[in-house]
Length: 128
Image 1 (cartoon, rainbow, N blue to C red):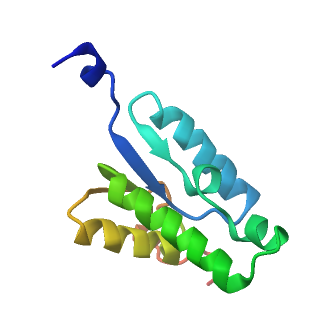
Image 2 (image 1 turned 30 degrees about the vertical axis):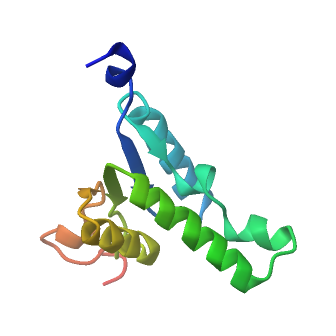
């Protein structure tokens, strides 16, 4: 293998929620950590976001198509899809991205740092 080939990093698609400042900050932190091993596609940085497209004057329909198309194309290019599974339920967009990646035969990896769904005591005591 040539030096050029050996320096090419695998392409990783990062799927996860990106709707709050905390989610985006965590995603950026993880991208930074992963970037030493992968070329990381993070939709909030490398794709298009609905609020930005709507502010630019696009209709909801046009903006939705752009976001969907960008992210599906990035999944198709990916070698690996990493799906953030934190939260009470998996983010619906991340779940769809995982399904597409799986159907395309991509290597899929889940990351869960949130123990709530598997905790032996069930729901958060403050909810009960």
